[in-house]
Length: 112
Image 1: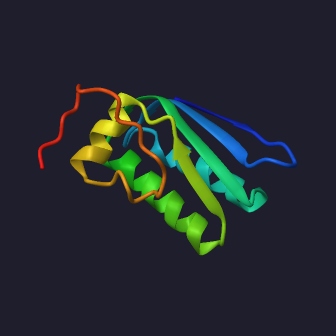
Image 2: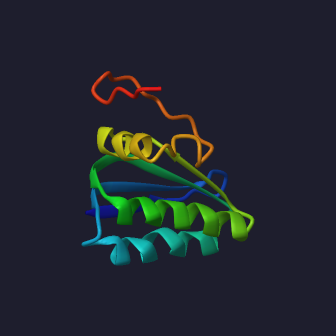
């Protein structure tokens, strides 16, 4: 699991998460996701490299979004990997984060 952050003065902070977002590493991830909220008015999280996510990883994303809102910051999530799309779909959270979720694969069909 790795988290990299880039920031330019005119653009939002950009975090890229690669690897697993599971109960085994959410404590480490928590600090890496919350710390930039102190420095950034806007933050983007790229989840394209997330290979596995469980309920603990999902809770971390929800907590980060809520913390950003509480601090008056903007947080967007993009690049949803198949693992992230599956968990968002199972929990019906595609719209919770307020971001566009690209569902381009029939790999995870949803029934209405």
